[in-house]
Image (cartoon, rainbow, N blue to C red):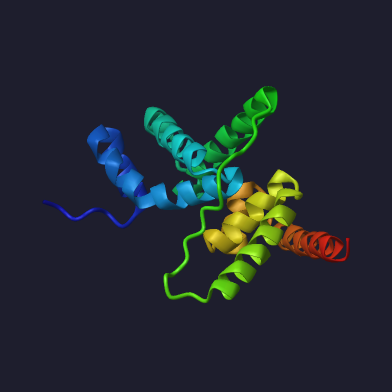
Length: 185
């Protein structure tokens, strides 16, 4: 058994030649893509379905994929972004109500008062984030969940690094304003 290439270009080439090798691409990126989608949808089941669809679409379109100097993950995030946009459009047509409970897991030894306070603070933050436009939500997910640099975020969002820094600054100000509005209102 051979070692997997560390380089995405080599792995992509292997997967183009032998579709079974696509499983290695899936293993390398599924957690990041799922996390990104989960934070955009807020629903485990929809995130699982959309993540599956991202990788099906990627596998079907891999023969057409061309390296354009961007990280391979940019291509996967772009597919995810497009599927999420379609999902929101379809969801708006059906006017669904989200009945999922809070998915946070706590440690059994945790202080119940601290858990309650943490959950309340998290809920306030998530509600404030939901008020942001989709591009700002995407920025926060890529920055804090996937821990990407401004440069990499810029590549994924097709903006300059300076534009990402500016958007990030404006996003934090908007979040602060929204949270303060809810604290006093």
